[in-house]
Image (cartoon, rainbow, N blue to C red):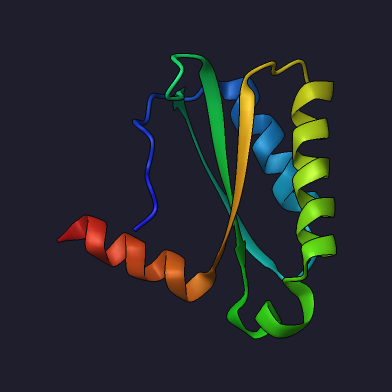
Length: 105
């Protein structure tokens, strides 16, 4: 099971940038889920999970596509003046749904 970082309330500027990233995302990206907190080294960090449509798994979830999406997320956050270390991870929509169901139980 993936490690989920301790969540703290993200500031409104970070939310604005994430919402912009959501609007810019390719159609096969179902959602962007983010949390902010401190990484294992105690540094401020942002975790972004890119949620792909399950049907895009075979055709769009390639190394090159993931690298391009990862790079654009990190760059957009830097351009917005958000210096926190950014961890970008990828999941399918069904994986995300399962994690949400487990969290509710």
